[in-house]
Image (cartoon, rainbow, N blue to C red; front, side, top):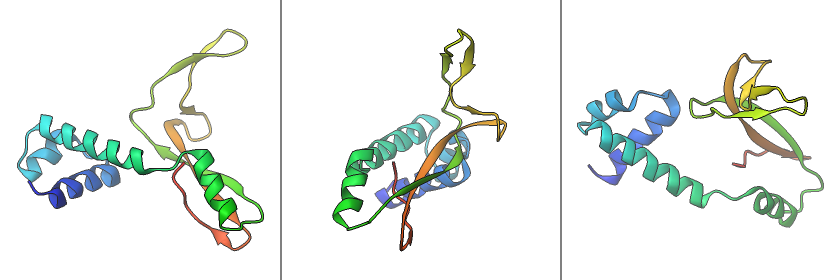
Length: 120
């Protein structure tokens, strides 16, 4: 499979959260290969993404006078971690009671000229 179709497979997985077995079958590859393609692509994207301090340094270098961090909960089926509260109660760290679902928060820094999405 060419890198174009490998990337297309991963983009479809990101967009639709499709089962990797079905997704792989649609592209003519095995489930294991589909898992490997997704893992490779996510590793490449994670290596290229700036961390929080780099993102803040970039906006400071661009001359932003202030930054507002806003967020949007994104559905995620890989967020399963329990933690203990100060009172000693165990709870799911990635569960949003407001949205009644598991997920992660995508951060969106804004400034006086509008909003710009930066992966954080």
